[in-house]
Amino acid sequence: MMKKTIFITGASSGIGKATALYFQEKGWNVVATMRNTDSGKELAALPNVLVTTLDVTDSNSIQTAVSNATSTFGTIDVLLNNAGYGMLGTLEATPVKTIRQQYNVNVIGLLETTQAVLPIMRKQKSGTIVNISSMGGRIALPLGSVYGATKYAVEGISEALQYELEPLGINVKIIEPGVITSNFSKSVAFNDENITDYKVVVDKIMKTYKGGESNEAFPVSEPITVTKVIDKAIHDTTNQLRFPAGNDAEQMLDARAKLSDSEMITMLKENFGI
Image (cartoon, rainbow, N blue to C red):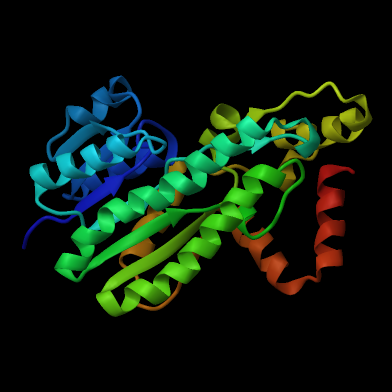
C-alpha cells in the first residue's frame, strides 16, 4: 500500500510540529511547511519529511509549496490548515492594518491554500481537509473580537465546504482546540492600548489568560493532545464535522450547547472576574 501524504501549514512549532513528528513516526510522508525553514531542521533530518517554505499570505509561496509536495511525494492525501496566530485586545485600540493581517493569515491564507490543494484531491477523488479552528470559533471570548471572528469564519467556511466536497470523495473536518501551551504563551499578540477607560477590565481578563488566580478555568493542554484528535478526525468514517481538543474545549463547548446566551455570558464573566 502506498504511503499517504499529509501537508501541514505552520509546522515550525506547536501543533504543526507535533503533528508532523507524529505522522512521520506513523510512516506517513510529511510535507512540513513554514515561513522560515531554519526552524525545521529537526524535521528535515527525518526520512519521508519534506520541509519547504510556505507563507500563507503569499500566493506564489503557496503554489510553490504545493508543487514541491507533489513533485516529491506524488500527491496530497490530507491538508492540515494549521497556520495562524492569536491576537487579543480591545477592538477600538486595534489598528485596521492589524485586523487585516489577522484575517490574511487565519482566513484568507487557509482559503487560498485549500484552493491550491483541491485540484489534486478532486483528480484522485479522495482526500481530507482538516481546519484548525478553536473553541473560540464557537464561543467568543473576552478581548477576542478580531481573533474570534477569524475562527468563526473558519467554522463557517468548513461547514459550507463539506457540502461541495463530499460528493467528490473529499472530507472536511474541524478541530477545536482549547488553550494549548504553544498558543497563549508564545504566539498571542496583544494590542497594549493607552485608552485608560478599558484598563481595569483588560487587566482582569489578562490575569486569567496569563495564569492568575482564575487560571484553573482554562487549563492548558499540550500540542500532542490536538495531534491525536487530528488523527482521529482524519480516520473518522462518519459525517462528524467538529472535534473538540482538550478538556477545557470539551467542557466549554458542552456548556455552550446547553446554556442560553445569557447564561454563557454570565459564566464567562465569572471565570474572568469581570
